[in-house]
Image (cartoon, rainbow, N blue to C red):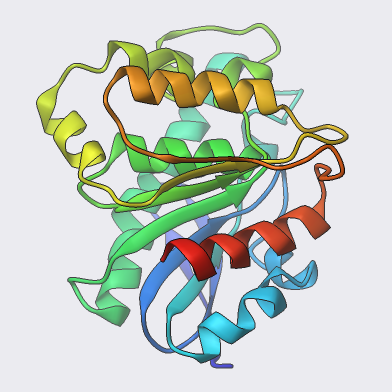
Length: 243
């Protein structure tokens, strides 16, 4: 497998940000880490190994970046409004730096999808919904789509605009809706076992259907827990059967 690591100083985040890619062709899958993890998390927990048959066959190239959740919503020493500012800086980093980096390397017409598990699932979905002109879809696993699950009671306009369960019902701008609806790859998957929240996924699914947004909802069984074995099974299944 072709693996390449890189790093650059991010103007959006005002810090050095590493990234890694796996593969040589196909569409691009951008992985957003869970919680406060780093760009090598998905490799460390063998998710890249699980995807290796698809990567080696040239179906996709996987990119992975650092999270900055420990500098925003998971930083208990930070003012909540500053957490929201930092969260938006991460969004800009993805939109203005990461996506252009991917397309500069793979081609301007490369399809780019975001994916993540747990907190990364919310980020992946939010990034796609906010910029469907740049990102072509999302694969979200074991997520919730309500940012207030992480804000410890804080609420402001920026929480609203980064919380899909809140802003999608009020999204009436056809510029956004038409681009979101044109995606053939909005995949929302979860288990029903320990620490999973299938009800939250069903609620968000209904929000999307109410807006006429086609998507793929997968609710797996009570033996499917909020853990790496689940995501190592889910993501290759989705790539193998839906793409």
